[in-house]
Image (cartoon, rainbow, N blue to C red; front, side):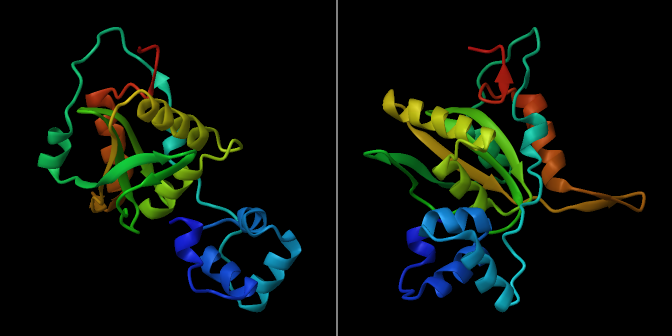
Length: 206
């Protein structure tokens, strides 16, 4: 969620710090965004008993963010395939000057997301931090977070070339297999990448 939305109507820095932490921002990010010292952020959150913002759960996208392309190529997959399976449209990415925004709001839940370039599914990922937080990470595209920066750049390149870039999400249920827990979101992401071979996930594809 954009910082302007999270902090709208909040007058004090302390209120903004608490709101941003609840929205999934790291303490270091809060300090940078509000242009204040990290120690100030830490004190406000410790005093409020808020332990969020120390670190994020490791993103499962990293294991499949860029994988080697197989020898055989597949036809581009249209978004209708995902819609028919239960994905929902979130909105379109747009550029206003240098500001990247997503027209819709993703669900807060953990889930799988896909980016569409015109009528082709080009990227599939999974998040354990919540889909809203993940879309905000892509919107900002911090250089220190390689996946966020790389995909942010791809979105910008697509828009600059006159393409439509949109986002879709799904929140699959987890389940048990013979008494063992199975992460539905992680399994769906891995299966879709094998099936679709999205080119933004792939190394060696044009």
